[in-house]
Length: 105
Image 1 (cartoon, rainbow, N blue to C red):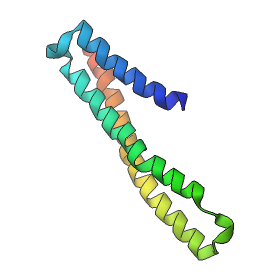
Image 2: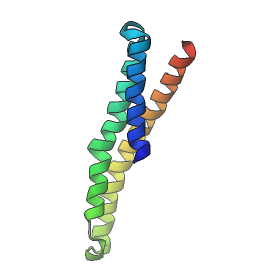
Image 3: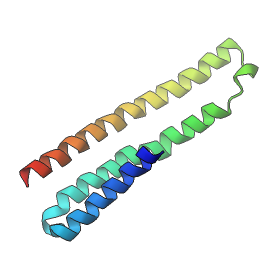
Image 4: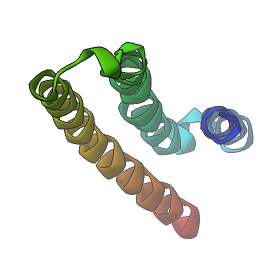
């Protein structure tokens, strides 16, 4: 939980420091990339992954037969993995972009 919340705080701090130190005219790209991270990584986590995780935790697996259990697992894994690939791609892209911006400055 600390890592997850810490990453949000770090990105918000990056936005703030960028705006204060270099201003919006030069720091707009950092702000844009940071918002892409917040929406694309944290937004997917909050909107997709947390509800899926909560749903799977509420399932009483001892009450399900093998077929129902397989169906629940397939529904969960298909959606979770699809959005995790998107989330991971965005996170990697944002990291590379922010590092590139830093090295150019």
